[in-house]
Image: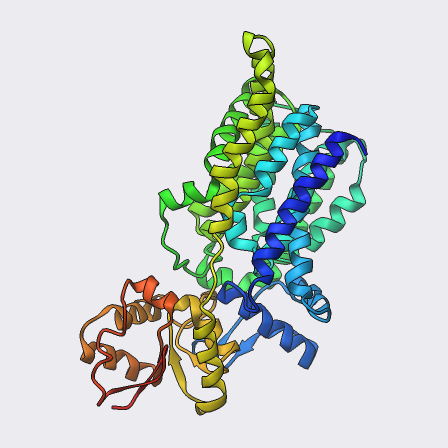
Length: 472
């Protein structure tokens, strides 16, 4: 095996090994959306169809989503630890995709390897995909392969593969709208004569554009009527600019943004314009609230990782023309240390877990609390209430088509954050809630050490460490 291929394999194995360690160190998953996915998978096994109505979520609501990922995951779930292992193998394939995409632009194996290393350990993608069960894990590799295939369509390369992967993408996640916005910006570059494409390629891209548009419209037409372009159904996540910068990683920001500059000024490669079109399209979707902020930034980061190879190559070329030529081995070590400190360590520490004792409390509630009760929790833990405790929640993280999600979010935030017992009781009565779930996550979320009004034993009886019963 040639040395670059061996190094690439080692990067992949390092990425996969860390991901598997972080995923397998616990028997639980790291997000409410993962537990929602488990409920959909259970529905497929029980009824042959995904769950489109849920009497437990928001005390009863409808869903709309693309089903393919859940059917695929249901197959993986038949294998012991299949969901934890196979999904991490899929997302780890980004190492290879980023490398070959970068190499097709730079024709330089060294810079492509560094880009693959940086792209393999982006903190925000670790945060969103490690120990998770969500369509985003399949979406990321698919969309990057599709971007890779676009420039070769005028040579009739891989046309059938391009169309098949696009169809899989659109049936995987509503985030396939990203491809539409990418093609719109890409068309603008063509119109401005940055590069030319032939008639066949135009027809293929137009076909794909309308294929994605029509399928999404047929599935989400009710959502588009009710919410307009806001496909997140009002995103409750707070936007923290500094946190986003940290989760992207400093090496990626430096080399990625520099790569955009060199790509626009020194290169006229269509592949670069495809990636820049994707970045601009993602930024527009985030602005229009058509995509979850962190998921959008995660995809943007993957595109930056490919473009980073350009500026990394330029750095090596500059050193070759100076007296620093002899320090290239030192530079390689510096790159590795910088990536370790500023990317790999933040990536590993970005992965969060639910407290196992809190999850055990929910299992206790499933076995010991009357089935029809309503339990209040932070929105991010709502799907834990429905999946583990098998109880009705007031709110969860799936806002699309949910009844009054903004009002419920405000009420729940008030109930956990207030000192006023009367205000909290009024909210609990409004939603017929008789149990409260306050885990370590909830305490961190609301920056409280306990339920602020929970000392009144005439109204609140502590059943477990994280579960209170409302008795007045």
